[in-house]
Every structure is written in structure tokens, then in C-alpha cells.
Length: 387
Image 1: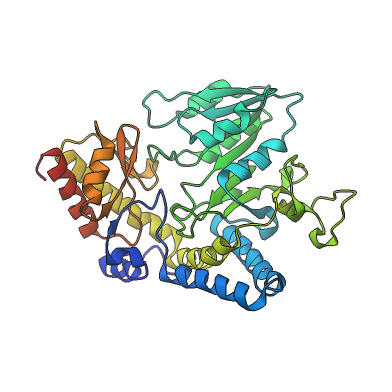
Image 2: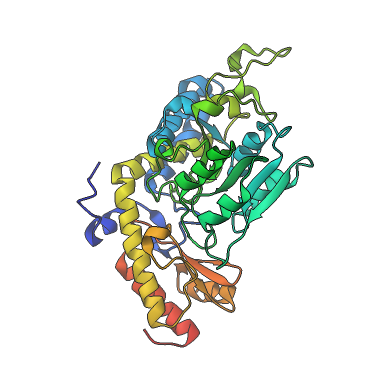
């Protein structure tokens, strides 16, 4: 792994860029929605089909289960955790559903979430009749002040569940501070890191979080269908009410009349995972670790700083934190008709994304300065200003 003192320069970025087929025909700046597939992951997907065709059912123990263990180990490496504290899931929704089902609400029935979280987070508790969901409010529509969590978390709070990085603004939260507030009041912390893993360094041990969720869909560039749950030792005794055969201590014992949960985080797993994404996720995670997450973040921070600078020159309103240390990997630009702007750029083979009232630009470490300059020039043409 290369050190942080050796930053990713344009030449290295160009080299990584050649590993992703999409750049043969597009300028892709939408990794926060769906990370592009690398040639290595594409070949792994073909290998999945070849293994299925060659082995049939024996592919389970000859190829698939060893890869499940490998991907769990790689997730653990990415967040500074032990493999036994990590299990895999199908999506952030299924992972959060499993976690939410393991909480005892009999004495504490309040859950604090942020009003600018991705809706999936709040939905897990809004559907529970015995749970009061309280929303931490944003004064600027970009982030949530820590004081808001301090105000809301009390002796009735079972959990604080929120994002590491907000999907619609790119603002980064201090999850260690939020966790301290939760623990001081006897609550647990649940962090959605789906917009973080693969972009920012994550250390679940240092942050002292109870649960952390991430996946391969976005910045990891491994595809949809593969998520992980980290569960700290202190919550491993929790038993989800949502379960499946992979959560059993001896899943191949096929015991029907009683359920003995796994001693590890596997007790939060469900049924058969998305095996194709395990194949594509392994080379994606290996490449991420090879490049170095610290270096990835520094590269993306430089690119997003440049986007913000160019947006200022165009008099476009940036709806993300101005300090790069306070944001993840996206820059949001306010626009009256974001869908039209996205369509205009797509017509020029430039891929960005739209959210209500905003355009979201999310470059990755394999993007270049030229990608940024060409993309912002295209925005200038669309809105009728100069850069």
C-alpha cells in the first residue's frame, strides 16, 4: 500500500482510469450513486458464471463460501475491525432492519435520527408502532449540529441512528462525538456509512460505535447487493428478530426445531447472499486497499475543492460544506431544474446526478482535473455563464 506522503497525481489517476471500461466513452462523476465497474470486477463476474457452469451445487463449498469469508475479511480491514465482528447483508435496508429488530424497546422506546438522513434510516423505526422517532433538525439544510443530538438524546432513548456522511449534501458527521452522547445517556449508536466506505478512512474502534453499515454499491465500486454490518462486542449478545439460516451457529446442521444463533456478528445475517456481487466486490475492495483509503480521500478532496472553486467563479450556489474537512466526496449545486442540467451533460457523455433542487457531482480517485474542467465548462454552457 502506498503511503499518504505519495499523493495520487494526474498520471496515476490516468492509470487507474484505464482499469474502468466506462471511461472509454464517458466522463463519469457519479460514484456516489453507483461506482463504475473495473475490468477486474467485470472478469470476476464472468468467473462467477464459469464456476456456476462448471461445478453446479459444489460451487458452494469449492468457490462461494471461501469468497464469502474473504469479502468479510476485506470489509473488516477497511474499517479497522476483527472479522468476527463483521457479517454480510443484502442492502443497507436489510442490514438496518436486522439491527432495528434486535433492540429492546420495552424501557427505552425513543430513536433519534436526522431529518436529512437517507429515508431508509428513519423508515426502520417509523414502521414500529411502539417506537417514537425523533428527528434532529438542520438549521441550514446541509448538516446537523452536535448540540441537536445533545438536546434530544435522553434516558428514554434506545438508539441514535444516523449517517456518517449525508447523501444529499456530502456533510460529514463526527460519529465519535455522537456516539459519546448516546453512550453517556445509555443509548447505542447506529451509523450508516454507505456514503463513506471506500472514500474516507473509517475506524470503528476509535469511533467506539455500536453498529456500522456499509457496502460496495457506491465508492467501493463493487456493485449492488453486498452490504456489511459491524457489531461491537458489547452488542453481540443482541438477537435480531429478523433472521435466516446463515445466522445459525451451524448453518449446515439444518436444525429446524430450535435456533442457536452464531456467536459472532453472523447472527445478524439472513439467507443466501448475492453471490455475484461477492465475486465483483472482492477485486473492488482489494483495489481500494491497494490504492489506500487515505490517498483516495486526499485525491477526492482536491477534486471537490476544485469543483467548489469553479462553481464560485460561475456564481453557482454550493449546497455542501465549504470546508473540505467537513464533507465527504460530493459537491451539491443548487439549480432550478437539476434534471435538465443532468440531461444536458449526459448528452455530452458526462454523467452526474440530480437530487431535489440540486445537482450532485461525485468524482473519485480515478477522475482527473480535465474531467472537472470539462464538466464545469459544460455546466457553464448550460446555465449561460463563463468560467
